[in-house]
Amino acid sequence: MPHNTYHQHFADFGERIWLNTASEGAIPLVAAEALKEACEWKLHPYELTLRRFREVPERLKINLSRLLNVYPTDVILGNSATYGIHLLANGLPFQAEDEILVMQNDFPTNILPWLALEEKGVRIRQMVSENSVISPTELYAYITKRTKVVCLSHVHSFTGHMLDIAAIGHYCRQRQIIFVVNISQSCGNIPLNLTELPVDAVTCAAFKWLCGPYGTGFCWMTSSLRERLDYNQASWGLLTAEELAGTGPLKPILSKEARRYDVYGTANFFNFYPLAKAVELLLEIGVSQICQHNQQLVQMFLEKLDRSCYEILSPLAPLPLTSLMVISHKDPQRNPGIFRILLEQGIYSALWKGKIRFSPHLYNRQSDIVKTLDIIHREGKL
Ligand SMILES: Cc1ncc(COP(=O)(O)O)c(C=O)c1O
Image (tube, rainbow, N blue to C red; front, side):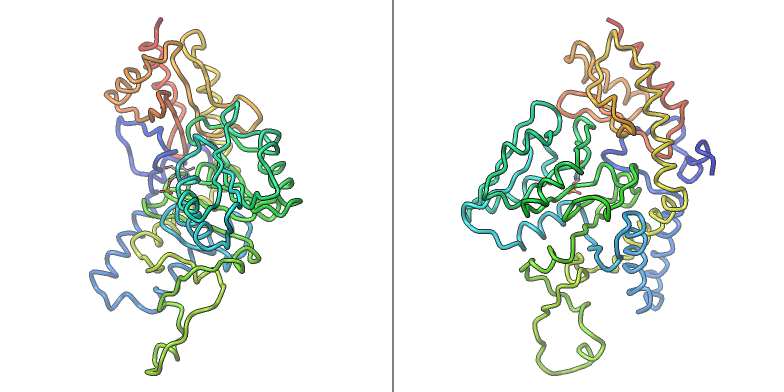
């Protein structure tokens, strides 16, 4: 599939340009078709067959597992990236004085779920980095004998900088520290092979680079980590046909299978069926092809950006760059105004912490970058 045809898989945005996938990705047409099909099932509830109840989550888990090279039976379906972190924060057995390391100024999903543990005497240390993401050396200085978990984003939402997962993961593994990575800003955009990465758990919002509906996400953790969860999650969907048919007392669900931790209402036809179709499309195109496509747009933008008026805050190396480009006018006070003018012209970026973020994906073309640059150059004249 040639790169310049990817936009055909999505709705026509007319004159508008969506450069904000880091907040929300568009769903592809095949996902919209799946949603229509799921509506038909609900309009005619006899179409909500047991087979569909089973197949919708199964199919999604298979697709997600292919994306990350893991077993489908280890994928846990959720509604956000927050969901996976809560499973760990509420399910792992922490003691007073244990330490959890997160990074100050990371996306709140990676911090908030842990903070309630402070009431139990667990210390949540919000590390400070000199740069946009914590470097391995900076992290090592925070590690103590009480460090139990390190939880960070793979790609930082506000600057586009990428974490050195391999170095940090190996270091944590040698010390039996649980390493949790939020892949919401990389999965679907950068190839990831979890069998080769020293991570214990990943969590991901599926409504950005995976082009799924809002309210979808998933997590994955090693089976040994899952075994350590002590979390009361029990849904009737886990009962066997015999148990469901029986009339006697029920027993508690003690299984530690991943599916026990799926978000309740796991078949979730309106969300998970379109997401499964969206991921199928990404697999068909191939994440490395998607990465190449996005790289071309990112490199074009960064190369042509007038550096006499603008500073680039996102990384310029190593390759592949992330698809999150963050820039600031040399006079940062002008950023909100430039953001607003872009919006008036139908160009959707994001204004985070006073800086402008652009995040192109499959539906964007070179002409989108040219038009955006024209406007920011015109408006940014010193
Ligand atoms: C790294 C990261 N995690 C998570 C989210 C979304 O949060 P959640 O899926 O927990 O609602 C975002 C952005 O919206 C993000 O950038």
